[in-house]
Amino acid sequence: MELARRALAHGMKCAVLALAAAACTSPLPRAASVNLLADEPGAVPARFAQGLVIVEASVDGTSVPFLLDTGSDLSAIDARLQERLGLRRAGSAIARGSGGNVSTSLVRATRFEAGPLRAESPVFLLLDLEFLDAFARAPVGGILGLDLLEGLALTIDYGTEEVLLARGGSGDASQGARIPLVRSEGLVGVEVVIDAEHGVPFLLDSGMSAALSLDPEEARRIGVEKIRGRERHVGIAGASMAPIARARTVTLGGRDLPGVFLVLERPAGAFAGAIGGGLLRRYRVTLDLAEGWLALAPRSTKAS
Image (tube, rainbow, N blue to C red; front, side, top):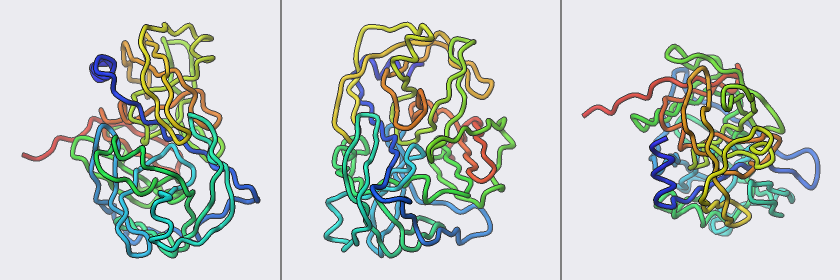
């Protein structure tokens, strides 16, 4: 709640990157293979900025910083890098983001690497990602989405600023209850209870800097209190000013969070709302995409 109030007071921007790709030719192409070259959980070098996670990755041997985005079903790469990397065209696609749709291309590289993660012949949406640089406070060259994480267990510890990848089924949820995942259109989410009585499926979106967003129609149905003020909402289709509301209580995984602010804008895909880094950064988050659960544990403390 404190973070939401501070964001409201200072006009913090809200970067929403829920992406759902649709190929103009079916089926949507994917990487030839995705492998984890470690039997034990392996660390992915990363830095954290305003609730966003930027991992150190490489594409065909060239270092490229990627936004870690569980709200994207397909990974993406900045159009500014296409010529430099010599990426091969792999078809056309429509990228559906929270701010609208963008017609774009699919491109294919030879190899993607991030810590112990290796993908051969990966496919990327080609997008203009320059708008992300201001949020990450450094250039961002790509988006690491679910297509390159499927079948794995991902842990993001916002306290120690660590990212770990493990084989699916080996994620440690010992410090948090397992919340079943809801899957839709290649994306994943969990049920959130608003004002102690309204269960709503929310997209899990680590690429969103706000705490929560909610479809305005759903907000009206529930009776969430709209308040004065708007927040600048930035996505792949450009910027917009989204109104803000406040829920009396938001319950996630048995935890009651009072007085949470929500940005009133529908995310991509079939979910009515989204959970972003503004809320996730309170926890040590484990997402097991193989077994289908999310666990939120108290975040760790950095060693002094």
